[in-house]
Length: 119
Image (cartoon, rainbow, N blue to C red; front, top):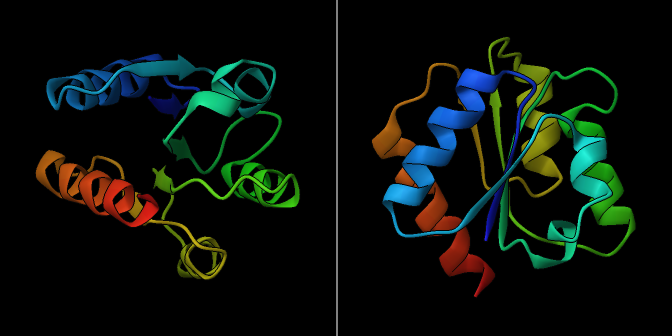
């Protein structure tokens, strides 16, 4: 199960379609809080999340998951790429960091690497 968190409906739908084309089940969420309140927080093998969202940001979600002992692969996507944010996400263990719009093949390769590393 790959969970996709983005406040933009179109990005969420397009990303879910891409992930499903690989044969994975997906769950989509409009916010990090929605994801954290869902059963998928325990069932996800990977999370693709926007960086900037209303409420909890993607980096805050990453910190929360790590604090809760959940070390699942996170792949970040953002319309506002900042090197400082990328470094922070990657140093905390992110599997990838992409600018919107991202290349589908690059995302697929990142998902496959992340899932292989996670076992």
